[in-house]
Length: 51
Image (cartoon, rainbow, N blue to C red; front, side, top):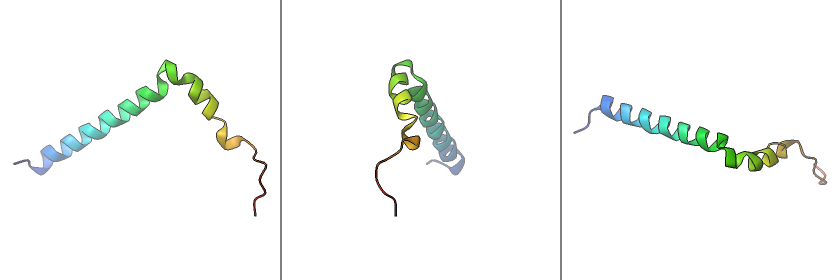
């Protein structure tokens, strides 16, 4: 049976590996063009009227 400290360690390991996977994906060279295109999306002006 797993005790709480072992479970906490496994959860910490899972979150750490998830974070590292996302960071590697974001900085992987083949994703550079897509990320460059997406980085300015919040600043683009839309032609819609906001109420």
